[in-house]
Image (cartoon, rainbow, N blue to C red; front, side, top):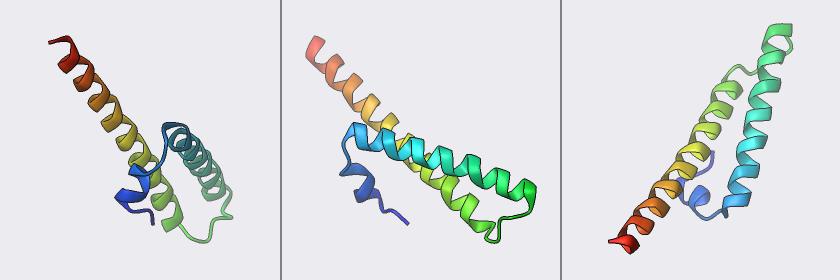
Length: 74
């Protein structure tokens, strides 16, 4: 499981790449559930949390950038 500092230490490009990989993994795990091939159902939950962590970090960066831009314009 990735810690918060791990996500913060990534560049935007790396973070987007990890987000895409996690979304792809969720997609594949859903198919495995439907076909009955998934042995570890908890892995889907973990993958969804990875997606949420990456999206949260990206959103935090967007907010910080907007606040910095707003502070410059004041």
